[in-house]
Image (cartoon, rainbow, N blue to C red; front, top):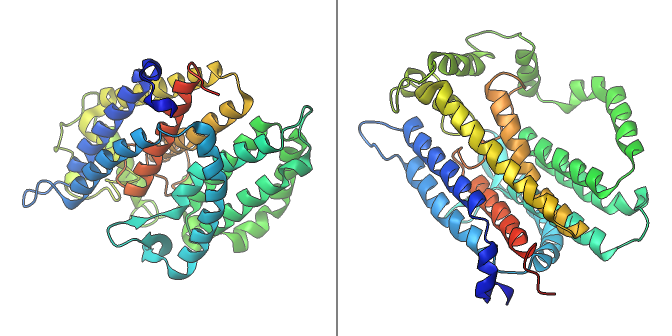
Length: 369
């Protein structure tokens, strides 16, 4: 097994690993802050998040062991399993906040939609690899990929989980674009979406999703539809330059800010660490993504490059969408901030994605064929 060769560990990318650990540590700190109570300082959410990080690091290391081509092959077949799990979730899944998103596995609840973020890139890269062509791929070559993407998107949307569905969709489309699908596909798709937008608005979106879009355009009652974003803006603005201090954020401590431990954890950070803390976290994310993209630029194999980008693009998109959402630059959707928001399934998939990327990063300089 290639990983047992001691020389290969010379190519372990310590920079990205340290940045990942740093961000997950900051996330754990603010899960603690967002769920703190004097009666029980270490909340159950903090304990679960700590467990998620420890096990996530184990998953990270396990994902380095197999050859990345083996991971692509497993992921290809695993993608069909995810579709089956998504179907099962719709009928037998655990209900939370009115949605069927989880499969109860006794010791923890698994969110199958998170697996789609990881396995679809493997499906795409492996499918194109086994159908290698010297010339460019035709549109018909992408039909199985687009079919799998559409099916996954619709099943996740049906749960309903619009945020995750959009991340899976946009990630998949970016992968197809990079793989060489004709630009006319995007042009015709945009035209079709424009034509059917009125119909999508009437029957495609649920009432609360419509309200979120209207809130983005400045409508809604400040005590009802706009409450969440208004409280986030207050928390961010009141933090000032240096913040109010850890555990001293009033919007957070007095529970004015909903979903502080999950989707709006960045607002908690802004209130307690201020602009300087927010910029530090943003700089760390930027440095991490720059490092990953730099490594991708060094890859020589086309399918290796496609797989590597595919398994991190969902993290990049989720980070951008979540922070933009909290700052009021995008409508509110249920997308956690990678490595920082509370959520075991998302945390595990994020660590698995980074682990697979580390696998590829190590083999880019040390290859055993």
